[in-house]
Image 1: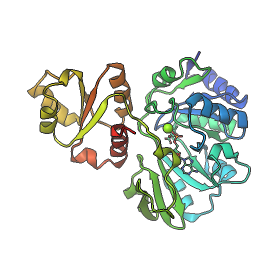
Image 2: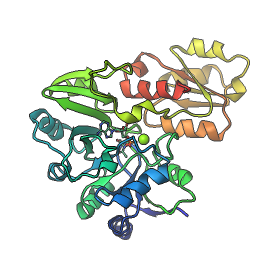
Image 3: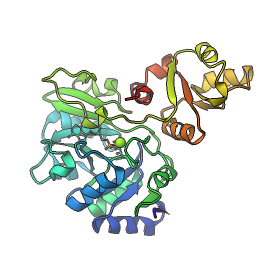
Length: 326
Ligand code: TXA
Ligand code: MG
Protein backbone atom coordinates (compact mmCIF):
# COMPACT_ATOMS: atom_id res chain seq x y z
CA UNK A 1 0.00 0.00 0.00
CA UNK A 2 1.24 3.47 -0.87
CA UNK A 3 1.30 5.93 2.00
CA UNK A 4 2.05 9.61 2.29
CA UNK A 5 3.60 12.06 4.71
CA UNK A 6 3.65 15.84 5.00
CA UNK A 7 6.77 17.37 3.43
CA UNK A 8 6.71 20.32 5.84
CA UNK A 9 7.49 17.90 8.70
CA UNK A 10 11.10 17.05 9.48
CA UNK A 11 10.25 13.45 10.39
CA UNK A 12 8.75 12.92 6.94
CA UNK A 13 11.87 14.16 5.16
CA UNK A 14 14.11 12.06 7.40
CA UNK A 15 12.11 8.95 6.66
CA UNK A 16 12.11 9.66 2.92
CA UNK A 17 15.92 10.03 2.91
CA UNK A 18 16.34 6.82 4.93
CA UNK A 19 14.13 4.84 2.56
CA UNK A 20 15.99 6.22 -0.47
CA UNK A 21 19.38 5.41 1.03
CA UNK A 22 18.12 1.87 1.72
CA UNK A 23 17.31 1.49 -2.01
CA UNK A 24 13.54 2.16 -2.03
CA UNK A 25 11.56 4.44 -4.35
CA UNK A 26 9.98 7.57 -2.86
CA UNK A 27 7.72 10.04 -4.67
CA UNK A 28 8.88 13.65 -4.19
CA UNK A 29 7.44 17.01 -5.25
CA UNK A 30 9.26 19.27 -7.71
CA UNK A 31 8.19 22.63 -9.13
CA UNK A 32 7.18 20.92 -12.42
CA UNK A 33 5.51 17.58 -11.57
CA UNK A 34 6.02 14.91 -8.88
CA UNK A 35 8.96 12.57 -9.44
CA UNK A 36 9.47 8.92 -8.47
CA UNK A 37 12.92 9.14 -6.92
CA UNK A 38 15.56 6.48 -6.27
CA UNK A 39 19.34 6.33 -5.80
CA UNK A 40 21.06 6.73 -9.17
CA UNK A 41 23.94 4.48 -8.19
CA UNK A 42 22.05 1.39 -6.94
CA UNK A 43 21.14 -0.84 -9.88
CA UNK A 44 18.23 -2.57 -8.12
CA UNK A 45 16.74 0.80 -7.08
CA UNK A 46 16.93 2.07 -10.68
CA UNK A 47 15.29 -1.12 -11.97
CA UNK A 48 12.44 -0.79 -9.49
CA UNK A 49 11.66 2.70 -10.83
CA UNK A 50 11.18 1.22 -14.32
CA UNK A 51 9.20 -1.70 -12.92
CA UNK A 52 6.83 0.41 -10.79
CA UNK A 53 6.07 2.80 -13.65
CA UNK A 54 5.83 0.12 -16.31
CA UNK A 55 8.34 2.22 -18.22
CA UNK A 56 10.05 0.84 -21.35
CA UNK A 57 13.73 0.35 -20.50
CA UNK A 58 14.91 2.21 -23.61
CA UNK A 59 13.61 5.45 -22.07
CA UNK A 60 16.38 7.04 -19.96
CA UNK A 61 15.88 8.75 -16.59
CA UNK A 62 16.75 12.28 -15.47
CA UNK A 63 19.30 12.54 -12.64
CA UNK A 64 18.31 15.21 -10.12
CA UNK A 65 20.99 17.17 -8.28
CA UNK A 66 21.18 19.89 -5.63
CA UNK A 67 24.11 21.78 -7.17
CA UNK A 68 26.54 22.06 -10.07
CA UNK A 69 29.02 20.12 -7.90
CA UNK A 70 26.59 17.18 -7.70
CA UNK A 71 26.00 17.46 -11.46
CA UNK A 72 29.74 17.05 -12.03
CA UNK A 73 29.52 13.69 -10.21
CA UNK A 74 27.39 12.27 -13.04
CA UNK A 75 28.18 14.27 -16.18
CA UNK A 76 30.74 16.37 -18.02
CA UNK A 77 29.66 19.93 -17.28
CA UNK A 78 32.73 21.65 -18.73
CA UNK A 79 31.04 23.16 -21.82
CA UNK A 80 30.77 26.92 -21.26
CA UNK A 81 27.23 27.14 -22.67
CA UNK A 82 26.17 24.30 -20.36
CA UNK A 83 27.67 26.19 -17.43
CA UNK A 84 25.95 29.43 -18.36
CA UNK A 85 22.58 27.62 -18.66
CA UNK A 86 23.10 26.09 -15.20
CA UNK A 87 24.00 29.48 -13.76
CA UNK A 88 21.00 31.15 -15.38
CA UNK A 89 18.22 28.60 -14.85
CA UNK A 90 19.17 26.34 -11.92
CA UNK A 91 17.48 25.56 -9.67
CA UNK A 92 14.56 25.44 -12.09
CA UNK A 93 12.71 23.57 -14.85
CA UNK A 94 15.63 23.02 -17.23
CA UNK A 95 17.12 19.55 -17.86
CA UNK A 96 20.49 19.48 -19.64
CA UNK A 97 21.78 16.43 -21.53
CA UNK A 98 25.59 16.12 -21.28
CA UNK A 99 28.18 13.32 -21.77
CA UNK A 100 27.91 10.93 -18.81
CA UNK A 101 30.80 9.95 -16.59
CA UNK A 102 31.71 6.26 -17.01
CA UNK A 103 30.44 5.19 -13.57
CA UNK A 104 26.80 6.18 -14.28
CA UNK A 105 24.81 2.95 -14.67
CA UNK A 106 23.68 2.21 -18.21
CA UNK A 107 20.23 1.36 -16.80
CA UNK A 108 19.91 5.08 -15.93
CA UNK A 109 20.78 6.33 -19.42
CA UNK A 110 19.22 3.41 -21.34
CA UNK A 111 22.64 2.69 -22.77
CA UNK A 112 23.17 6.23 -24.12
CA UNK A 113 26.59 7.89 -23.70
CA UNK A 114 24.77 10.99 -22.33
CA UNK A 115 22.96 11.74 -19.09
CA UNK A 116 20.09 14.18 -18.50
CA UNK A 117 20.60 16.34 -15.38
CA UNK A 118 18.24 18.70 -13.62
CA UNK A 119 18.34 20.75 -10.42
CA UNK A 120 14.75 21.04 -9.14
CA UNK A 121 13.49 24.21 -7.45
CA UNK A 122 11.51 22.67 -4.61
CA UNK A 123 12.69 22.85 -1.00
CA UNK A 124 11.54 19.32 -0.17
CA UNK A 125 13.47 17.74 -3.03
CA UNK A 126 16.52 19.94 -2.43
CA UNK A 127 16.63 19.09 1.27
CA UNK A 128 16.52 15.38 0.52
CA UNK A 129 19.21 15.64 -2.17
CA UNK A 130 21.58 17.08 0.46
CA UNK A 131 21.46 13.83 2.42
CA UNK A 132 21.21 11.31 -0.44
CA UNK A 133 23.30 12.78 -3.27
CA UNK A 134 21.99 12.60 -6.87
CA UNK A 135 18.66 10.80 -7.43
CA UNK A 136 16.97 9.54 -10.58
CA UNK A 137 13.35 10.71 -10.84
CA UNK A 138 11.01 10.24 -13.77
CA UNK A 139 7.54 11.72 -13.45
CA UNK A 140 5.69 9.77 -10.73
CA UNK A 141 2.87 8.46 -12.94
CA UNK A 142 2.24 5.01 -14.29
CA UNK A 143 3.55 5.12 -17.90
CA UNK A 144 0.91 6.48 -20.27
CA UNK A 145 -0.96 8.46 -17.57
CA UNK A 146 -0.68 12.25 -17.30
CA UNK A 147 2.18 13.39 -15.05
CA UNK A 148 1.08 13.97 -11.43
CA UNK A 149 0.86 17.53 -10.11
CA UNK A 150 -0.47 16.64 -6.64
CA UNK A 151 0.33 13.94 -4.07
CA UNK A 152 -3.22 12.60 -4.60
CA UNK A 153 -2.44 11.94 -8.29
CA UNK A 154 0.62 9.90 -7.27
CA UNK A 155 -1.35 7.94 -4.66
CA UNK A 156 -3.97 7.19 -7.27
CA UNK A 157 -1.44 5.75 -9.74
CA UNK A 158 0.54 3.78 -7.14
CA UNK A 159 -2.28 2.86 -4.73
CA UNK A 160 -1.15 -0.75 -4.46
CA UNK A 161 2.60 -0.22 -4.58
CA UNK A 162 4.93 0.02 -1.62
CA UNK A 163 5.80 3.69 -2.14
CA UNK A 164 6.08 6.63 0.25
CA UNK A 165 4.66 9.84 -1.26
CA UNK A 166 5.99 13.07 0.23
CA UNK A 167 3.26 15.69 -0.04
CA UNK A 168 4.72 19.05 -1.06
CA UNK A 169 1.50 20.64 -2.27
CA UNK A 170 0.46 21.36 -5.81
CA UNK A 171 3.27 21.73 -8.38
CA UNK A 172 3.62 25.34 -9.50
CA UNK A 173 4.68 24.82 -13.13
CA UNK A 174 2.44 21.84 -13.89
CA UNK A 175 4.30 20.62 -17.01
CA UNK A 176 7.60 18.70 -17.18
CA UNK A 177 10.93 20.53 -17.52
CA UNK A 178 12.41 21.76 -20.78
CA UNK A 179 15.01 19.19 -21.96
CA UNK A 180 17.97 20.52 -23.96
CA UNK A 181 21.13 19.11 -25.50
CA UNK A 182 24.11 21.39 -26.04
CA UNK A 183 26.60 20.92 -28.88
CA UNK A 184 29.30 23.61 -29.00
CA UNK A 185 27.04 26.67 -28.80
CA UNK A 186 23.91 25.11 -30.30
CA UNK A 187 21.12 24.44 -27.82
CA UNK A 188 18.69 21.82 -29.13
CA UNK A 189 15.31 21.63 -27.42
CA UNK A 190 14.42 17.94 -27.09
CA UNK A 191 11.25 18.60 -25.06
CA UNK A 192 9.62 22.04 -24.69
CA UNK A 193 8.86 23.20 -21.15
CA UNK A 194 8.52 26.26 -18.97
CA UNK A 195 11.96 27.60 -19.95
CA UNK A 196 11.22 28.89 -23.44
CA UNK A 197 13.29 29.06 -26.62
CA UNK A 198 13.37 32.87 -26.27
CA UNK A 199 14.89 32.57 -22.80
CA UNK A 200 17.45 30.02 -24.02
CA UNK A 201 18.39 32.12 -27.07
CA UNK A 202 20.35 34.50 -24.84
CA UNK A 203 22.88 31.70 -24.22
CA UNK A 204 23.37 30.13 -27.68
CA UNK A 205 21.76 29.30 -31.01
CA UNK A 206 18.49 27.51 -30.35
CA UNK A 207 17.36 24.61 -32.53
CA UNK A 208 13.95 23.04 -31.98
CA UNK A 209 13.94 19.33 -32.78
CA UNK A 210 11.08 18.44 -35.09
CA UNK A 211 9.24 15.14 -34.75
CA UNK A 212 10.62 14.22 -38.17
CA UNK A 213 14.32 14.17 -37.48
CA UNK A 214 16.93 14.26 -40.17
CA UNK A 215 18.91 11.05 -39.89
CA UNK A 216 22.09 12.66 -38.66
CA UNK A 217 20.36 15.01 -36.23
CA UNK A 218 20.54 14.53 -32.47
CA UNK A 219 17.76 12.18 -31.44
CA UNK A 220 14.76 13.60 -29.64
CA UNK A 221 14.43 12.75 -25.99
CA UNK A 222 13.64 9.03 -26.38
CA UNK A 223 10.56 9.44 -24.19
CA UNK A 224 8.96 11.79 -26.72
CA UNK A 225 8.25 8.91 -29.09
CA UNK A 226 5.83 7.25 -26.66
CA UNK A 227 2.15 8.02 -26.50
CA UNK A 228 1.97 10.34 -23.52
CA UNK A 229 -0.62 12.36 -21.70
CA UNK A 230 -3.51 11.00 -23.77
CA UNK A 231 -6.78 10.76 -21.84
CA UNK A 232 -9.51 8.25 -22.77
CA UNK A 233 -11.55 11.09 -24.25
CA UNK A 234 -11.00 12.44 -27.74
CA UNK A 235 -9.17 15.78 -27.57
CA UNK A 236 -10.17 18.49 -30.04
CA UNK A 237 -8.14 21.69 -30.46
CA UNK A 238 -10.01 24.73 -31.79
CA UNK A 239 -9.05 28.38 -31.94
CA UNK A 240 -12.21 30.30 -31.05
CA UNK A 241 -15.12 30.09 -28.62
CA UNK A 242 -17.55 30.34 -31.54
CA UNK A 243 -16.08 27.21 -33.11
CA UNK A 244 -16.37 25.38 -29.80
CA UNK A 245 -20.02 26.40 -29.42
CA UNK A 246 -20.86 24.96 -32.81
CA UNK A 247 -18.68 21.91 -32.60
CA UNK A 248 -20.60 20.00 -29.99
CA UNK A 249 -24.21 21.19 -30.25
CA UNK A 250 -25.39 17.60 -30.07
CA UNK A 251 -23.07 16.02 -27.55
CA UNK A 252 -22.21 18.65 -24.96
CA UNK A 253 -23.45 16.69 -22.00
CA UNK A 254 -20.48 14.36 -22.35
CA UNK A 255 -17.97 17.08 -23.25
CA UNK A 256 -15.47 19.07 -21.23
CA UNK A 257 -14.54 22.56 -22.38
CA UNK A 258 -11.07 23.92 -21.59
CA UNK A 259 -10.77 27.62 -22.17
CA UNK A 260 -8.65 30.62 -21.10
CA UNK A 261 -9.92 32.35 -17.93
CA UNK A 262 -11.05 35.62 -19.49
CA UNK A 263 -12.83 33.78 -22.31
CA UNK A 264 -14.41 31.59 -19.65
CA UNK A 265 -15.81 34.60 -17.84
CA UNK A 266 -17.47 35.82 -21.05
CA UNK A 267 -18.90 32.40 -21.73
CA UNK A 268 -20.27 31.83 -18.26
CA UNK A 269 -22.18 35.10 -18.31
CA UNK A 270 -23.54 34.38 -21.78
CA UNK A 271 -24.53 30.80 -21.31
CA UNK A 272 -24.66 28.51 -18.30
CA UNK A 273 -25.83 25.24 -19.78
CA UNK A 274 -24.61 22.52 -22.02
CA UNK A 275 -21.12 21.38 -21.16
CA UNK A 276 -20.62 18.68 -18.57
CA UNK A 277 -17.62 20.56 -17.26
CA UNK A 278 -16.05 23.92 -18.13
CA UNK A 279 -12.51 24.54 -16.86
CA UNK A 280 -9.68 26.97 -17.23
CA UNK A 281 -7.14 26.08 -19.95
CA UNK A 282 -3.81 26.67 -18.22
CA UNK A 283 -0.53 24.72 -18.04
CA UNK A 284 -0.79 24.62 -14.26
CA UNK A 285 -4.04 22.61 -14.24
CA UNK A 286 -3.90 20.74 -17.57
CA UNK A 287 -2.93 17.34 -16.17
CA UNK A 288 -5.45 17.58 -13.30
CA UNK A 289 -8.17 18.32 -15.81
CA UNK A 290 -7.15 15.42 -18.07
CA UNK A 291 -7.27 13.09 -15.07
CA UNK A 292 -10.68 14.46 -14.02
CA UNK A 293 -12.02 14.02 -17.54
CA UNK A 294 -11.29 10.29 -17.37
CA UNK A 295 -12.83 10.04 -13.90
CA UNK A 296 -16.00 11.86 -15.09
CA UNK A 297 -16.41 9.61 -18.13
CA UNK A 298 -15.97 12.53 -20.52
CA UNK A 299 -15.89 11.43 -24.17
CA UNK A 300 -14.61 14.65 -25.73
CA UNK A 301 -12.39 17.45 -24.44
CA UNK A 302 -12.69 20.62 -26.48
CA UNK A 303 -9.79 23.06 -26.00
CA UNK A 304 -10.05 26.64 -27.18
CA UNK A 305 -6.48 27.60 -28.11
CA UNK A 306 -6.61 31.36 -28.44
CA UNK A 307 -3.53 33.35 -29.56
CA UNK A 308 -2.15 33.57 -26.02
CA UNK A 309 -2.42 29.81 -25.54
CA UNK A 310 -0.76 29.16 -28.90
CA UNK A 311 2.24 31.22 -27.78
CA UNK A 312 2.88 28.72 -24.97
CA UNK A 313 5.01 26.13 -26.79
CA UNK A 314 5.12 23.67 -23.87
CA UNK A 315 1.36 23.73 -23.32
CA UNK A 316 0.67 23.35 -27.06
CA UNK A 317 3.13 20.43 -27.22
CA UNK A 318 1.28 18.60 -24.41
CA UNK A 319 -2.14 19.40 -25.91
CA UNK A 320 -1.01 18.00 -29.26
CA UNK A 321 0.25 14.86 -27.54
CA UNK A 322 -3.04 14.50 -25.68
CA UNK A 323 -4.79 14.78 -29.04
CA UNK A 324 -2.70 12.13 -30.80
CA UNK A 325 -4.04 8.58 -30.72
CA UNK A 326 -1.18 6.33 -31.52
O1 TXA B 1 10.14 18.07 -14.90
C1 TXA B 1 10.67 16.98 -15.10
O2 TXA B 1 11.61 16.84 -15.89
C2 TXA B 1 10.14 15.77 -14.31
C3 TXA B 1 10.42 16.01 -12.82
C4 TXA B 1 10.07 14.82 -11.97
O3 TXA B 1 11.76 16.36 -12.65
N1 TXA B 1 10.73 14.57 -14.76
C5 TXA B 1 10.39 14.01 -15.95
O4 TXA B 1 11.03 12.80 -16.19
O5 TXA B 1 9.61 14.49 -16.72
P1 TXA B 1 10.54 11.79 -17.33
O6 TXA B 1 11.35 10.57 -17.08
O7 TXA B 1 9.08 11.64 -17.28
O8 TXA B 1 11.02 12.43 -18.65
C6 TXA B 1 12.40 12.48 -18.97
C7 TXA B 1 12.61 12.81 -20.42
C8 TXA B 1 12.20 11.64 -21.30
O9 TXA B 1 11.56 12.14 -22.47
C9 TXA B 1 13.55 11.02 -21.63
O10 TXA B 1 13.54 10.31 -22.84
C10 TXA B 1 14.46 12.25 -21.68
O11 TXA B 1 14.01 13.06 -20.62
N2 TXA B 1 15.88 11.89 -21.46
C11 TXA B 1 16.45 11.36 -20.37
N3 TXA B 1 17.76 11.12 -20.56
C12 TXA B 1 18.04 11.51 -21.82
C13 TXA B 1 19.23 11.53 -22.61
N4 TXA B 1 20.39 11.07 -22.17
N5 TXA B 1 19.14 12.01 -23.89
C14 TXA B 1 17.97 12.50 -24.36
N6 TXA B 1 16.81 12.50 -23.64
C15 TXA B 1 16.84 12.02 -22.40
MG1 MG C 1 7.16 11.21 -17.75
